[in-house]
Amino acid sequence: MDEKDREILDILQQEFPLAARPWAVIAEKTGLSEQEVVDRVGRLKEAGIIRRIGGVFDSRSLGFYSTLCAARVPEGDIDRVAGLINACSGVTHNYLRDDEYNLWFTLTAPSEIEAREYLTTIEEAAGITIVSLPATKVYKIQVTFAMGDEQI
Image (cartoon, rainbow, N blue to C red; front, side, top):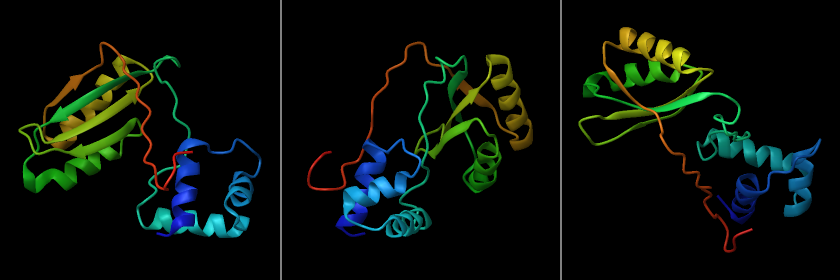
């Protein structure tokens, strides 16, 4: 990853252009061609440095229900269970922790009832019990990872 990649990552995280041709806007800011930006972003995605490019919405304001979930999964079954969890379109994060409850994920659904249905389906398919921990108070913290020498 070079300085131009880092500059692109800063822009993607902090000021993604809302334009008909966002890659062209990024190209102008970085001194690259539009195709170079597209190619670099593609390489960063292939390398796993960029997982996703998209908007972040306040699901609660849109009427959705979300919950943090935890499960105890036998070590030898983690990949299979994580795959079942990740197959659910409402799962936004899924991560392994060094704890008794070792697999944690967040689930967003149109309603609490639908979230419970998703969790029941996962529990039955995976043979596990999932603990649902819906937020009682929301704290929203913007997280960005400064890639260059200066913050944008």
